[in-house]
Length: 401
Length: 215
Image 1 (cartoon, rainbow over the protein chains, first blue to last red):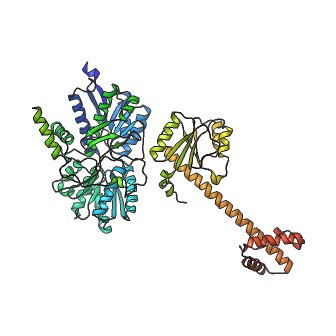
Image 2 (cartoon, helix red, strand yellow):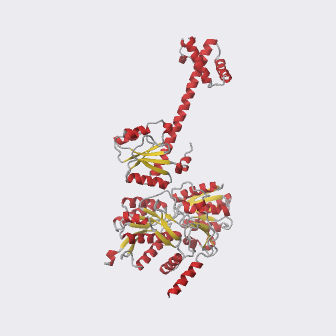
Image 3 (tube, each protein chain N blue to C red):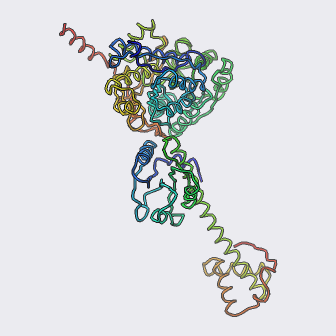
C-alpha cells in the first residue's frame, strides 16, 4: 500500500564516465534531500522514491533515459544533468511530455523552457564577480583553458568580453577533449609558460580538472602568483587531485562547504550521516539538494504533481538553502543565488575571500555583462557571520529546556 | 556592417507585437522581456506604426487586412525590422509573408526557444537591405553623373574641337570656379546644347568610344 502511494521522481546523474565525480556528488545531494523529506513524513503522506539511472557521461544517453523515465517509469519530474550537452538532450523530451525538469548546474545561459527550473548560476552570477576579483588581485593577462564542448566556449566568450572591458587581454586559448589525458595538459602548460599570463581561467570539467591542476603543479606552476580560476572546480575535484595541486587556486560559486550557517551545518551533518564523510559536497550537490526541497514544498502546497500547477507553484518557491535564502525568478525560471569567491588553502579547503551581500538576480540572456556593474560589487565576508546568531539559538534553546 | 554589433545592441531594441492579445502574444512578450528588450503589444492595428519600434512582430494570416498592409507600405529607410508570426504554412500565408516583405518568421504555438535567433537574423536581413538600398542609391547617382559628364565631354569635343582630356579639364575647371559639381556643369552644357541645337544629336553618343575618366 505504501509502495503504491510512493511519489516517484527521476534522478539522472552519471555514476560512470568523465563527469562522474561531480555527478555522483549531485546524486548524493538528491538522495539526501529525498531522505530528509521521507524522514519528515514525505510529501502529503507520500514517500518520495528516486528512480536512478546512470547515463555514463554520454550526452545522448541522457535524452534516451529521460524518455524512459517519463514513458516507462511513470515519473513526471526529473532532477539531473551536469553538462549543457546533456541538458540539451533532455530538453525536447521534457517539453514534449510536459514534465518538470530541475537542472542543478551552473551553465552558459541563453535558455528558457517552461519545463525547466535552473538551479545553478548564470554567467552574471559568477563570471563577472570572478573577473573583477582576478583583475584586481592578479592582473589582466588571461589564459583560457577549457574542455571542448559548448559550456567552455560560451563561457570563454563571456569572460573575454569582461576582460576586454577591464582593458585586459586573452593571451592564449586552448581546448582539450572531455576525455583528455594528463599528457594533453602537458602541451597546454608548455604554452602557458610561453605566454606568461597573470591568471589562468579554466573551464575544464570532469576528470580533466584533476589532470590539469596536477600537471600545473608537476610543471612548477605557482598558484600564489598565477592561479587557476574556475567556475566549476569544486570540493570533490580538489579531493581527487589532492590539496597540494589545489592549494592557492580560485573558484567562484554560490556555495562552498565552509559557509557557516545553520542551514549549512544541518546539510553537512545530514550528508555525513548518510554518506560517511563530506569530502564530496559541492555547489552543484547543494543546488540539487535545495531544488528537491523546493519541489517537495511546492507539491505540499498544491497537493498535486500536475506539471502546469507545479510550474505555477514553483514560481513563488523559496528555500533556506545551505548557501542562504534562494528563490526562483518567475521571469526566467532561473534562481536568485549567492555569489562567492574562494581560494583553496593548503589543507584543500575553500576559504571564502569575497561574497555578495544579497542573492543576485539571474540574467540568463545577458550577452555583454558589464564589469563595473555596481549591483555585482563584492564584499569581504562577514568575519563572524554566525557567531551572534548561534549564541542566540543556543540561548533560546536553553530557555525552552 | 558589423554583425557583432547586432548581438551587442540587442537589449537596446524596442519591440512591438502586432498580434491579437492571446496566450501566444503574451508568451512572445514574456520572451522578449526575458531577452532584455522593451516590448509592447499593439492591437488592433494603429493608424501608423509608432516611431519607437525597431522590431515589429506581426501576425500573418491567409489574408492580410488593409490596415496591416498600409502600416508596412512605407519607404524602406523608415521601415522597422519585421518578423512574421504564423500559425500555418499554407501557400496563402506564405504569400502573405512575401507580400509584407518580412525579415524573419516565428511560428505559433510559440516556443520561447528560437525567438532570439529570429530577431538576430531579422536584424541582419533588414540592416543588409537598408545598406544595400543606400549603396544602390549612391551607385545610381554616381552612374548618372558619369553618364552626364561623358555626354557633356562629347558635346565640347564636337563643338570646340577639344580633345577628350581638354573637354574633361574644361568641365572640371568650371566646376571648381563655380564651386559646384562636375555633374551640374555637365547638365548645364547638355541643357545649353539642347536649346542651341548642336551637332551632338547628329551622331548617337553610344556609337562613340568615349573613355570615362570619372568625375
